[in-house]
Length: 620
Image (cartoon, rainbow, N blue to C red; front, side, top):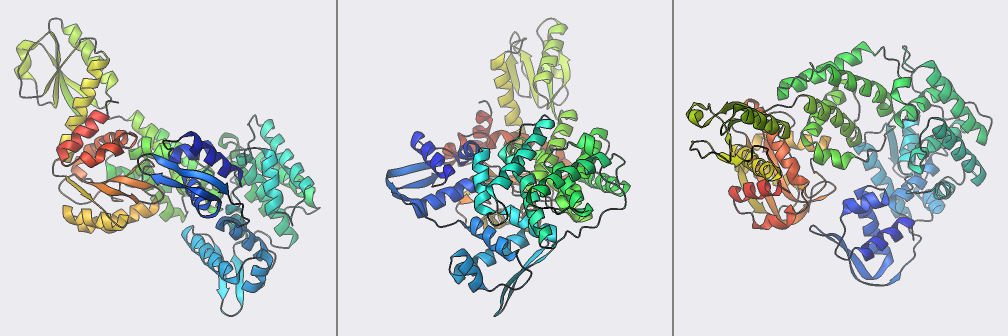
């Protein structure tokens, strides 16, 4: 049994009440998709006397008593796909399904099914590769050489925690191309380079570099050279190219006397940049391509016009994004993707920033013809999160009423604005001038006074203690939610998939025309938040009159994209109420990070129930 399978079972035996997919993902150092695949494989091929069940409320639970564990030589699809591609890369000729089946010891039908699944993935991931099935003949692998190599490497995903384990994985997958001695020597060289750069070498960081050298050397030996066209203007510093050249030659020398050419060196240098062995402040020539700068500015201009935000006027945002895109443009073109272990937290903690990042990425996809994966969008979101911190808008007006000395009112106002970034104190008065207070959402009064007003009043200590902060947060949440949820929809139901759910909600809200735009947004990057919720919304601000939410509480958990959801909130923003857009996303952020809410959802029957639930949950 694989190491990670044993570790997963050990955690399930310890956590008898259940453990979430995210917790298992972090513990094993893999994606939640991998966890689901492990569970499915264990249930189908290994466990006897017990099964692993998935509960929306408790996560994964081991039911029953394991009586035995079946050992099997059955490879997972990803492993079979790797060996199929590795064999096809030995020749440019058509290979029959029978030959592949004989080499891999599987039936021709299994090979055919796997070929079809690989073709689907190639199309989905927009790779410049053709896995062409020729009727009555067989299959042949064609396309851009770098894309072919990248496709093979994408199916080599060892979950090694030590370099000894990583060496074993390489020896298993690349046995015809390497020896135990050569892979050990190569990994040692790369580890030394990380040490020279004061970086801690881990198997996950070393693996992409080692794989590139192994595959490149083997393909060069067979005469399959890269055909990338080098740009006329130098994008990398000479010391960067020289460093890449020396490291690549050292790697090649371990295997044979082949010398990598300039194109090979150029692509390898960008791999080192993408894996951040070389950091961007010493790699990129900062005389940035004027055309790229223009496209980034155009993207920010369009984004600013859509959301009424000064993106283009924030010089730090513009500079940081330009340098980021400059550094990552070639790695994205070459599909040198870097893992983003923070993506789940970014999508839940920075919901609005992630939405901005998706729109920004969509502009780049159109203007630069790039595929921008979720991991990269997550890094863009961090730049927009910093922008929001620098440009916080105080959208809730309140008044402060003091008892005796004006200075206590001023002090209270300052403490309120320090604590609540979305609040602005527009009036500080004594009890005699309460009637002079302009239109506000809330009055915060000293607990030493007793006043009447048409506006809501909260009495607090002049020093604003922790209990006062909770009362204020509760009231602010209620104000925001009451404003936003007016005219919104709340339903319970069961749906076969997210398309049916979205179509139903939009029809009930009278916004059928937004369906295609919301689905387009889902195709760019799923709006599931990783806990138990999804927040679908249009790509662009629609031409509708009322800001509204379509809230769906599912009677049964439903798979959204990769995760199961219980709560779906369809957001319909408007041009003239964009301040609400930001406010509601901040409130929803608190919702989707609260692990207690799924248990309470079945009891929600009205918008008032939903408002009370969120407002009270936000106090924890």
